[in-house]
Image (cartoon, helix red, strand yellow):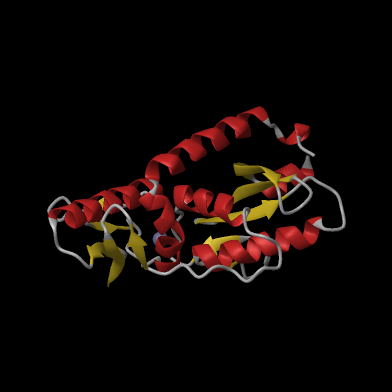
Length: 213
Ligand SMILES: [Zn+2]
C-alpha cells in the first residue's frame, strides 16, 4: 500500500514491453507542490527490470524534453512547470517501443510528407507558438499543413490560431521542440494515434495493478 501511495496514480500503461520480457510498464503521476511529475515503474521482478526502467526514464526525459526532480531522479517534470499529459502519454508509449541500449532516435522538425508531396517543417516562433510550413506552396501542401497543425492540436493538446490555421501554440507559453519532433509522426497519422490511444486506455482499465506481472 505504501508503495502505491508513493507512486501516485497510474496515467498510462505499456501492457507488454517486447524489449524486456513482456513486462508491463506503468507511467505514474504525482503532485509536488504546484508541479506534476511522472515516474516509470513496473511491478515485475527480474534482473533486467531496473535497467529497462532506467532506459525508458532517460529516453522519456530526452525525447519529451523533461528534467528530473532535484531530490529524486526517478521523477520527471517539464521545464515549463506545466503538464502536457496527452503528449506525454503518447511519448511514453512510443519510448517503450525503443530497443534497450540502442542510440535514441533523432526527431527532426522537418520531414518528407507524402500527402503534402514535399518537405514539411514545424517552425518555432517563440513563447510556445509553432507554424507548420511546406516547401511547396500549392493548395494541397497548404491544406496538409493545416491538417498537420490540427493533428498537433489533438496529440499535444495545443491551440490552433483561428486566423492562421497552420499555427498552433502550447497554452503554457513555453517552447517544446522535443515534444514537437517526437510527435511529428503522430500528428501526421493522427487517426492511427487516436485509435492506439483508445486501445491503450481500454487495456489500462482491464489490467489493474494487482493483476499485473
Ligand atoms: Zn509547457
